[in-house]
Length: 251
Image (cartoon, rainbow, N blue to C red; front, side, top):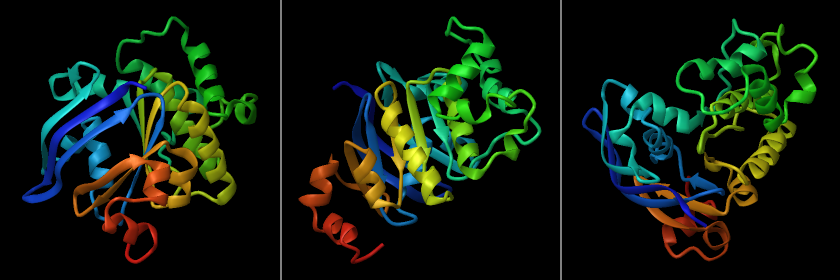
């Protein structure tokens, strides 16, 4: 298994607050990596650094190296990096005035499209990949993305990320606002997508991490305490702080 993202001595700040502290981490390709830890430990900031969204906050800055293949992402265009490394947020954020079709197609207008398909084919393929096509195919060119249920909206946002042909998909608690049935569909989707894409998922749900991820990292107070196979993290953690967290002693 190759390495999709290589993180070296990553530090990040909001103003003078040091949020991420010297993270070193190799994220394997074509698999799912889960990030767990209590609220405020730096997980979301870390994933926002991975596609340069952190720096979109005017008070934020970061230092270190994040390599996507041979490219240090800080040497590339932010727009191109965000095409290659997509993001799905905690709460679905479809463009409310756009149809389902236009929501998925919107990213294709932002940069060069390397896929040799017309826009209509890309939209259909992306909706199929996101397991949404069968539910919307009769009305997707007219129906607003905002009219869908919460779970459908989240899969629409995943389809929108897929349409630009990314290499990595970041998911920041993608199911935390969803009901159990919708959550299950998102987890099934992650399990399917990781054969083709690299997935990084932030989650407070440790059972979810165990179900979908091959590797898991435990964050605490801005530091990566432990990173190992998901099985080892949950059955034989090396650090007592990891054990205390997964057994519910804090967090």
